[in-house]
Length: 266
Image 1 (cartoon, rainbow, N blue to C red):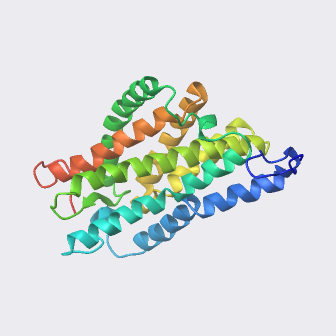
Image 2 (image 1 turned 90 degrees about the horizontal axis):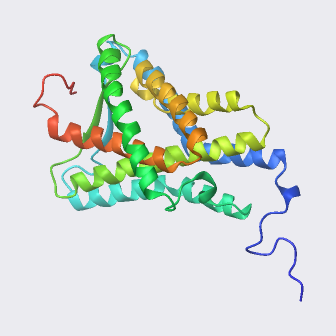
């Protein structure tokens, strides 16, 4: 018996992938993930700039305890938060599979591990050093809050959770803000330049809770990452770079906070 059109496992018929379908899908994915984070960060930023005192006298904490004094419950909440934050990535993978593509179309797979690791490590080395200098300068000028990368208790799972949190951030942001968004905007007919601006502004927007410095720094990083993605055709190196940057920030802060004079603390 001939299978019906649209049977389970078949790619979506081309006519189903209309501009309206793709537009609505993209808005829903962003609304469930980093688009919503951008709105939340904007509200947080408004609250910060309207609060008495300067921005650098306020703090933005990234990895905080969810159940102080109850380490096992805290661990459960930490792991739940990390896993639930990756659901939009699973949704994107599902949507791409339905059109006959999958995450491999974005270059997020295991086909070129050494390429991804090598290029990613090189990007992280360059951006990491300049990023720290930019943050310190922006905070010193009063454009940024004091960023506290972690405030977890000193328990056995602290560093594994910080590393998992860094990986989660990297996968979520690079898959959705670079790979998926650029693919969909291209299918919607956006020019490469306009798509680059949209991706970069989105990246900056959900870091606005850190202040103007966080917005500008991540916007510039977004421009660089879009350029590299188009040059290499792979999200993999960007995930590696972002993971290393966040691991360095989270773990580095945990090890150095209060021990070196140049690192601001809350």
